[in-house]
Every structure is written in structure tokens, then in C-alpha cells.
Length: 68
Image (cartoon, rainbow, N blue to C red; front, side, top):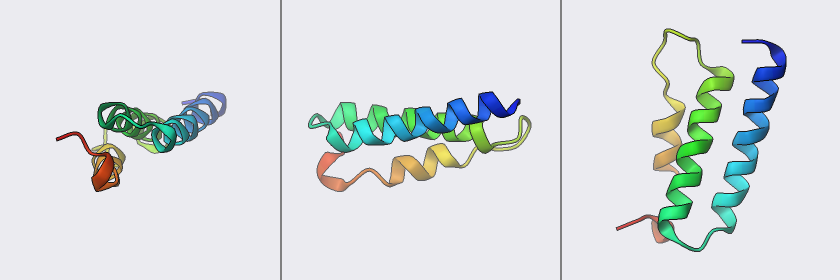
């Protein structure tokens, strides 16, 4: 992945995390955290390795904002 792709994915992940923090709807919070995880996986993951960021980001959703 070129540096510009990596930088783009990192910036998108940051934007998704900010949107998750501002969101009031649990489904929106979860969606933003999930997208942030995918962007972090793209930015830092190797193409043929497991992508752990998605699962850890999902676990970081605050309990009061989780979708039930």
C-alpha cells in the first residue's frame, strides 16, 4: 500500500472515531467504530494477515452506546 493510501485510511479512521463519539444512536456509534476498525486494518495490516483492529475497536464501544 502506498504511503498516500495509508495516510488516507488513517485520516478516515480518525474521522470515523470522532463521528462515533458524537453519535447518539447506538447503531450509528457501532457502525462508525466498525468502519474505523476497517480503515485501521487497511492502514496498518498486512495483506495476508489477520486483521485484529476491527474486533478490538468493536469491543471499545462504550456500553451505553452499544446496540442492544
